[in-house]
Image (tube, rainbow, N blue to C red; front, side):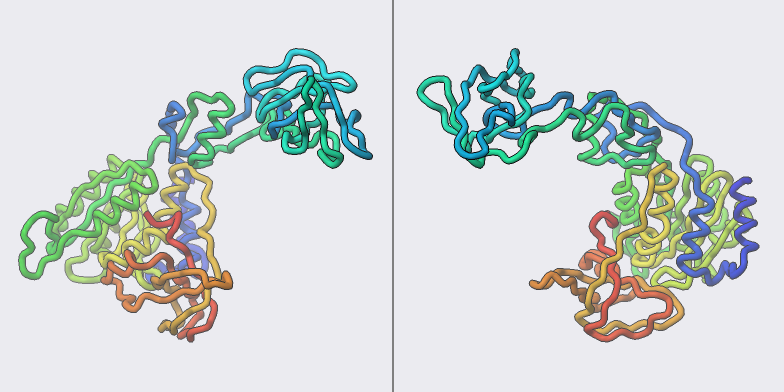
Length: 426
């Protein structure tokens, strides 16, 4: 089934309303149309930070590769420990990390050992150096309570990762911990999904490029820069097609160019019902649209569909609305198309420090500042200005206050869910 066929099937679903789609329903519809890109590339380990694994990683070895000491101290046989008092043993050598002791520890003997060093043959336990004292000869005396069980202070081969185990699955995004694990396996290069190509542009005669004088009645084109930052944060290959004036032919040509060269096309502005909002009519001509409006605030005029083989998102022109719709819908879609296994953003309960205004019948994403009180409870203070044109509210906030469809006005002291910007917003 093609994506177009799937969209037609979804459009025939019960409760389908392209002009008032519920938030969760819209997310569900979008997810059903998405499949990861097919392309991949082999890259060296230093070049894969932030990329997504194209195939499972199977461990070629045990980590650690040998039993080793977790402490500086003495390796010995637990059977030699005197449970009723001190234990004195003969020290027969040393084992360093990278330079193992060659020999066997027998009854009455021990080996000086350092953290990470290979456990000598015959030894099964390590006594910390703090619990031992070296004599004037080759003897070492251990305190009565130095160890209480065999295997203490000893790391076992394969304790972290066993040979043949699946270490990371396809779809895992590679961060700093993953880089370290891959290096510990001796992996020099891995296959990753190719970067997703995302073409974007803004529309409107009122837009003026930054660096130029600002004529009366005009505004600087800020949305493209916010969008570029969000795409860059996700590791996308961002293709900036600039600002396009409200001329249908110019917008149509830009949409065609974008769809021919990118996996995803994002426009900003022009998806409402104004006289100069041409995106909707052009999408009806060029592609297939699943929905135009959502039961949410800010960001009601959001379009999703296809132009040729490219997925299309039409974001609203108000700057806060553009950012909110990106984070609530576009971000997840891009990650799935990039091949990443995606979990829903974490929602945390927090107590309102001030009342919030809201009308029932739509989901709202208000901006706020969340912090922890001395007792550990999270509290959230709504931004004083929640207008969709107040872009500074996004810069000052650190979370979305997520207010469900059925909620109305809420008083200070009530508990709400918050979605922290950390890890979400770039």
